[in-house]
Image (cartoon, rainbow over the protein chains, first blue to last red):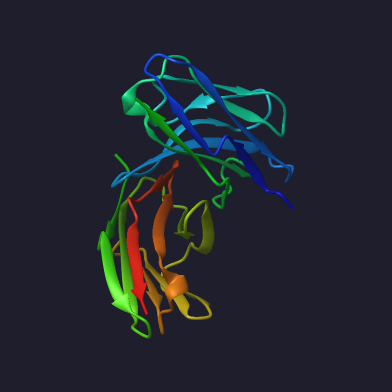
Length: 113
Length: 108
């Protein structure tokens, strides 16, 4: 049972480069999320998708875009990476938006130089 | 603005010690409080508390919620090296807000 799968696990980018982080879940969950985790700041919500076909901004959406490709997949794109986007990124999913328990992927450690 | 504050930020204990981790919050329209354990990778769910005074227990871990004073504690008894992790508190009001976490290191 894979749960939430994220790729890649590690990435180094140069300032200005673009990349897409991939996320897929096999639990038939409706809602999916992208968080970033920085030291001393906890997990902060970047974007979320309440259900297939919808996406909404979270607390820190600037510099990011998302696509809910289908019910299983939710990708996060950095169009022009900046050093301030160096972080650990987590994808998560839940059965519904207001279901409090989220299942997390194993994270992507991104460094922008 | 919704806020979740955890303390201490980090602590180091010896195997067999008992630890208490704290979580205080200010959120609009409180629904629930959750505790997660994060080892090297993904946060994993421990407890969800919705009612004040209810103590959740799972082996050596227990948690209490006080909705009047707006805090929760997570207790770990007879700590083991495998308890070393970041413990995250999150509160669900109109949105899910995470605290910064407490880094626990258990020395053998």
